[in-house]
Image 1: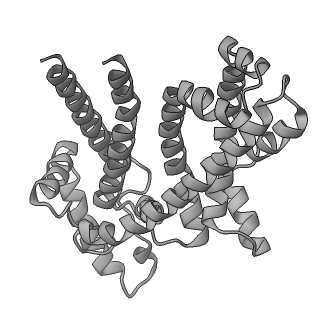
Image 2: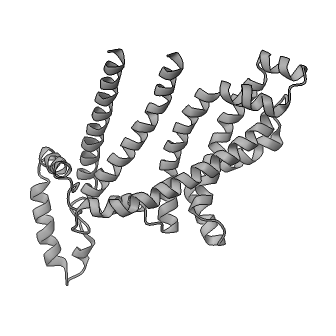
Length: 285
């Protein structure tokens, strides 16, 4: 009974977040400067047709409630609405890009965790933090994702996977180093080291199992960080994924596409956030 109540609470919270995303995105796009404008108005060949389309759009957008009704209607039909820019169902734009973005994020997260965890294990094994281990992470944290991607593009070295890996590894290392350093200083670990227990056995039998909940929570943050780094990486490197689609939708005020992509990202973050909670329940049981 208690598990069912908790599940209903999580579902209600997720639905509330999604409704907030739809409403917030619609209001922000509708009242953004230049919403009812089109670059075709500058071209005499298309100005007339563009004005007709904008007049019809203005009539449809006169009420925010009407816009919300239109967006939700697209979701109930299953096509997620019709793209303002491409004039095709939004689901046709999103479906092929899901695999591209998913593959990019999976490779970046796997490589970032391998790099950050290995670096943190070496760094945390010492008694005190050393600048040699901390400096690379600090330098990478000071560089914006877009700037790093632009540098790699200009230099002709690296790509979106490399950029996202470095961004994620730099952020994950700071947390992993603190968690593992505290684990190394635990009394039972110090006792085991004094008795000559091998480092490998300490890692597999004490360090990693003891820090499991913290590592799982950090994995959730890695997904959120990857989603935020995805947009500049895909836009700058021209990757045909959800990040590039969201950027184009924002630039062209394509509300149906923007709402759909934002909803997908919100669902991904909500599902990732449930993992640490479920792990805590399993441990308590």
